[in-house]
Structure formats: structure tokens, C-alpha cells
Amino acid sequence: MLKRIAALAAAVGLFTAGLLVTAPASMAMPEPSARIACADGVDPTQLPGPTTKRSAPGPVGSVVELRYSSNHCAWGRVRNVACGFDCGDAVWTDRAVNRAEADKGRWEGLLGWSLLNPGEKSGYSLAYNDNGPIMRACAQIMGGAGREIRCTDWY
Image (cartoon, rainbow, N blue to C red):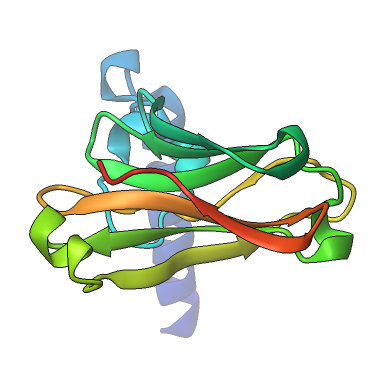
């Protein structure tokens, strides 16, 4: 009886494998970026249509950017930092219900907080859903006067 079950399982496995190998191209999976819906904590490198919506100058020629994808995800990116991981350079986003709440200091902060990788002069935070709320990107960057926090305007 066990031999028959094992043989049946093997046959099903081979049959399934054959279907996967011979599936028509029309059934192929779409590109990863087209399949990923915006959810909190998504890797932004997999998102479609990234653009910069806001930017702010940082110390020593660095730039803080609020990036946005066509599926309503937003994330922070920092570029051209002088020190990177060794100095604790980091990037994140803040999210508020609307501008009035943001102006009152009411927002979720440090979303997707990420330290830059060792040896890198730029980095990004995780992406968060921006379908309705407003967001901004912030970064902690080592500058001439020590660590400075710079943020973009809300978008």
C-alpha cells in the first residue's frame, strides 16, 4: 500500500512539473514591480514608476528625497552623504493624516528607519502606503556641526 502511495505521489509530482515547464508564455508571471501592492514596509526597489516628489538639501552637499511610486508607496532616500554608516547616517519617512495634523506635530515618525550600509554614500528607507495620508522624508546626516536632521516638505 505504501509503495502505491509513493508511486502516485511521484507521478503527480512529475505531471505537475511537466505542466510548469510547458505552460504557455501567456501564463507567465508579470514582472515583480507590477505585482507588488503598496503595503507598509515594502522594499522600494521592487516598486513601479519611482519619482522624486520632494527634496531638501542636507549638510556637506547631501540631499534628502521623498520618493513615490505609481502604486501609492512613498519612501525616503538620502544621497551624497560624506560619512555613511560609520557616522550613523540614516533615512526614514514620517506620515500624517493631513497637513493640519502635521502642522500640529501629529504624525507617525521614523517609518522604515534605515541606517546606510557600510561604505555607501546613499541609501533608502522601506516604503509605506501613501494612499490618502501625506508623507515626508527625513535623514540624520553627519555634517560640519555634528549630526543634523533634515526633512523634505510634506507631500
